[in-house]
Image 1 (cartoon, helix red, strand yellow):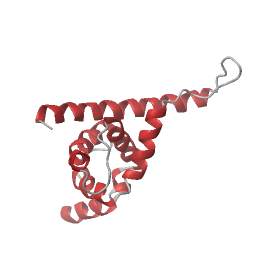
Image 2 (cartoon, helix red, strand yellow; image 1 turned 60 degrees about the horizontal axis):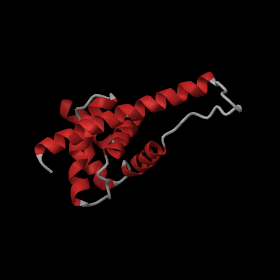
Image 3 (cartoon, one colour; image 1 turned 180 degrees about the vertical axis):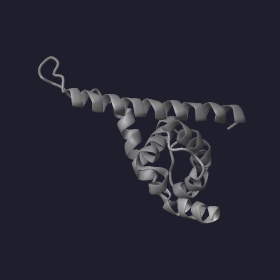
Image 4 (cartoon, one colour; image 1 turned 90 degrees about the vertical axis):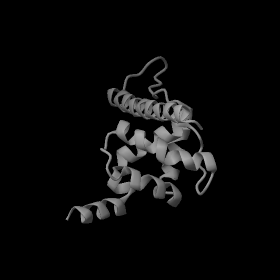
Length: 139
């Protein structure tokens, strides 16, 4: 994958993460409003592709090879989803391209969902050892 394609892929990851984050926010606000339309069906419209990506992301963040690639890259990133997504793309792209270790699909939606999972859980929860070693280095 050429540098320009990688850059475009990372942009797609950021857009996917923001889309997932927005959809989740809208879905939770729709439930809070509890509007009933039509026949009393108030279930929010949920994109099944996004739901699948979120399921895959929740599993992938627990894979040791994924954490080995992510945690060093996440050690100096802020906790906002866009910043995390910009790091997730380049960190996991080699795993997706080579298939080494965990099976990471080459999908900007899955990469974006991983960024959302990390943003929601917090970097320290996903990479507890990285934060400890960073704090020791600051002392």
